[in-house]
Length: 253
Length: 253
DNA sequence: CGAGGGCATCAGGGTTGCGTCAAGGAGCTT
DNA sequence: AAGCTCCTTGACGCAACCCTGATGCCCTCG
Image 1 (cartoon, rainbow over the protein chains, first blue to last red):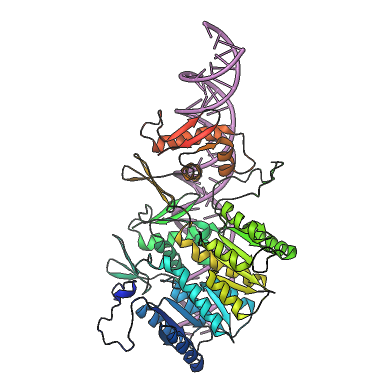
Image 2: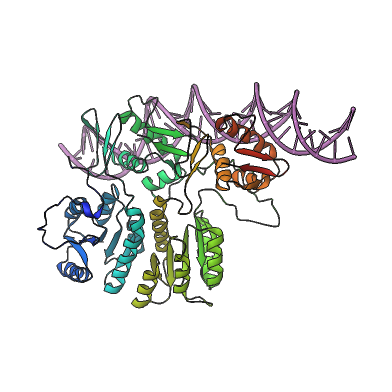
């Protein structure tokens, strides 16, 4: 299993001084995801000229892998990828990180934008785009992420009864992996990310089921029961998934 | 139904004269800044329909004033204002707050966008805009601002006898978490947020039970007793939840 | 000194919200 | 095409919460 990767910029796992580009501390790392080489080239050139540290990925799978390995400070993501839907990439990333995601797309459709933004994207730029504008939006995304960036939690959360690996999307209990459905996992994710804090039922519903859901509290009851049955030692008397009547739920380690 | 407590009994606002918008806790507050009435109207209607709490300002000066007074969760700002340059408004706001700013403008020029974004704006939408897209961008801006907390003051309040964590919605006493009902918590929250100051009975009633409540002081007596029983060392002689006869209550550390 | 209003406390009843179980239907795999 | 998993939806019992009225105390004012 992967080691818990540090979030701070200086503590990257690659230790040796012989990295290909000379990496300065404090440099902002960008991950560019696009399958069109000329777009990637243009972005890489412009970003490097402005002293960004740049990684590039041609498809969604590589993007997810690189994001986990390199922990970029911001991601520029083209929605039209060869291997998977761009929205799926966003969801995959949002499972374990809040890194700013700037979506790039040729589609001008309003629905596409709404879908991507609600999936967790931070900004949406349509092609063709002005390089100046893109860079300004990138600066804005990085700037507002800075204060929160330091407080980003680690990817592993342990309790007495089970272990959650947010990056690997795995839950281990008594040495065995627990199978969770997508919805169960998503709900667990939100709760674990806010460990110790109360999460209102409205927030849970909107995060997991979408912005238009806010009152269907019966969904929560059903899925909270599933989680407890799969993870709690005594589902009838939960220790980790606590109900705060009338307010919401709370995950306690 | 909404997550927060409060029976929806007198939803019709019988309160005459000062018709404050019915403010529910947990509602997102938006400040709309634009000098074109039809734009403002369209935005206000759409936002209110989606259960946002909306303020509006026709010029920069009013905007700055309202932002300081009402502490909105997000600001929609038109750059073309009659009294001052939109960028100046952004800078004025950024001097003291990190509230998300979504810029609205008729200018498509790249320079304008770069200038606004670098001044501290979070997003830039050109007119004419799609309402769906704008709302999605608004959701995105609010969402990523959430984890930092309310964004304002510190969230922990300590006394000799107990500790209140406003962000986690937790109260700790003698090392054990105290369970509060929604109404109890709501009342405590209002008092703690005004620590040291007197809060009138009317204000407490309207904040916790809704704008149409203002005279049912017996509610206060009952719930104040609950809070004291759960939190005070000697409930009969309260040290922290002080009664000011005929006036209101005061929380003292 | 007596009367009155405001406050604290308690207990009971009506209602809401939560946990649980089970069945129907959509989407995907085999 | 059949089978499976997963999501949705409804019903029901039960616990918890909110409201309400009654009682008694204390302080204030006549």
